[in-house]
Image (cartoon, rainbow, N blue to C red; front, top):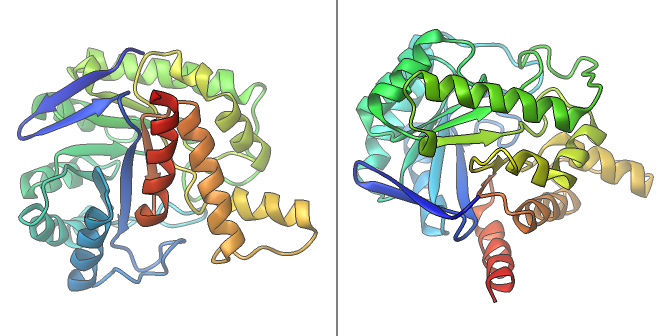
Amino acid sequence: MAPYTYSWGRFALEFGRKTLVMGILNTTPDSFSDGGRFFSLDAAIAHGQSLVDHGADILDIGGESTRPFSMPVSVEEEIARVVPVIEGLSKKINIPISIDTHKAAVAEAALDAGAAMINDISALEKDPDMAVLAGKRKVPVVLMHMQGTPETMQIAPRYTDVVEEIRDYLAQRAEYAVQSGVSRDAVIIDPGIGFGKTVNDNLLLIKHLEKIKALGFPVLMGPSRKSFIQKKLSAITGREINAASREAELGTLAAVAVSAIHHAQIVRVHDVADVKPVVQMIDAIQNA
């Protein structure tokens, strides 16, 4: 994919010229990664600002946990969690805010509040109004692959060829988005690391990322703090690796680094401060 810039509103994203870092801000009480530390409005805004200060290129805000076995929340509750945070941050920062939701009503409220992108874990499948909204508002949209739902996705996921099946799925969903009015240049695809995949499935998707990239759309990779990292390190070392351990953090950096080496256009991470210099050095080496 040749580098290009997608401009909309007051924002622009340069795809392919450097690895963009998307910082994660969960406004949920049950997030797998931060235990609800940023559930209060003040804490969420302060953390979002910190992610920007450490170099985030995009801020991704979500109000419904998508960890394995999590339960959905109502549209009203999700809006109540994300809109005040988006309103507060959009006045303070100059990078695009992405709304992480599969519900069109939540996405519309978030866009009205100052968000400028949609990150849909269902690849526009769960809510038929989402594609129409994305096309009408002319915003970038991330289409992610997930086998099943957050409640069921880690119950014995199975594939015949995980890379080929996910590539084909993302190709179909990207075409659906374009046919629904989303600009082809605004489509971003995400193989969904950790969403209905085994440990080895995740490793293969990172290893063979070039097959996903061959579709010609910018690719987002989100390995940050996913359980496959500590599971694989536990199997290798023969001892239990905790999700909050330094080993798991370094495992995330390794997965991010390989994704960047394979030219993922966006990496979605919790620890922007640690990831930013990693991808900056990788970009410098590859551009030398």
